[in-house]
Structure formats: C-alpha cells, structure tokens
Length: 212
Ligand code: NYM
Image (tube, rainbow, N blue to C red; front, side, top):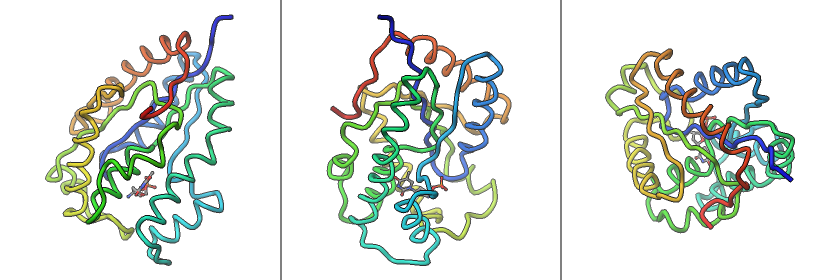
C-alpha cells in the first residue's frame, strides 16, 4: 500500500534567528497550499516534564546538567507517540527546535562532548528536513537584548553556534542552511520552497530513525 505520511520538518538556529516567526508563516503557507500541517515546539513546556524544564530555564530551580539534558530528551520522547500518529495521518509537523538544540546547548557546557549528548535522542523520528537559520552573533545582537532565561548570553550562544556547525557536518541529516539575515519575507520564501519539496517527496518514504 502506498505510504501517505506527513513530513517531519525542523527549524533550528541560535536564539533570535527568527525560528518561531518562520514556523508560523510556514504553517500558514502549507495549509493554504492544501497540505495538512501542525506546529510543535521543544521544549514543550505544557507537560509535567516540560514544567520542570521551564522552571529551570526561568532560573526558578537548579538542576544538575546531565539531569536537565535527559529531561529535555525525555520531553521529546514523551511526544513521540503523538508525533507518529499525526505523521501517519498525513499531517506534516513543523517543529521549532529538536534534538539538535538539545545537543548544541548541552555540549556548549564544560565537560560535555557531542557524542554523549546525542545518545539519549538516538532513535527519535528522523526529520525529513532540518533548516538551520544562520545568523552571526553580531547580527543577532542587532536584534536587541537577550532575555532573562538561562543560556541567553552572547558568549554562550557563540559556543552553541559552533556546536551546531559540528552537527551540520553529519551528512545523514538533510540540513539546509538558510540565511536568516534576509528579510522575513525572503527567509519565508526560501523555507517554503524547501518544505514543499520535502512534503511532496516524504509521502513515499518510510520515516527514519535519528542518528541510527
Ligand atoms: N534548549 C532547547 C536546550 O537547552 N535543550 C533542548 O533540548 C531544547 C529543545 O531551551 N535557549 C534550550 C534552547 C533555548 C531554551 O527554548 C528554550 P525556546 O525556543 O526559547 O522556548
């Protein structure tokens, strides 16, 4: 029987790259084109695990670094049954951050290597497309101050950027680098083109397993 699943599309990038705005624009564009789509974001702060993560990010609680890494991963795993169900129903998922953020942010902390950080997410549904919104730290700083949450400093974000660069060398992932310094409209057009191609080809392909 022909497979008619939705595509798993992820947007990644450092803070202020415009991921959330672009996810929303892409969602509208896909729906307008008649392709069913829904948006998700990680961390999903609505679950019990997500609330632990949220309190940590807001500096209302302290968590040991390995522990919080595993919570971020658990927060993805707990949503996997729902993700699979939607994809099987033919719904394309547009995901604001995924395991790549998980690895890039934790491995930017002292004493963490990429390899250890990737382990907990091995076997997650593999994205059909990962678009990395590229923005230099200098351009990001022109977009205003960082917020109050943990990790929102220029120095930390630069290390995160380097970790993303290492992750992007993995040719088993369909990475597309998008120049996020362009206008919102131009970035949107670029993202939509990649996404439409992906949605139309994913229909016939089995869903893969991440980093396996
Ligand atoms: N973050 C996000 C992680 O450290 N690990 C993860 O696995 C994920 C998904 O959480 N600074 C970090 C990146 C962000 C922060 O994200 C919250 P957002 O998109 O601002 O809610």
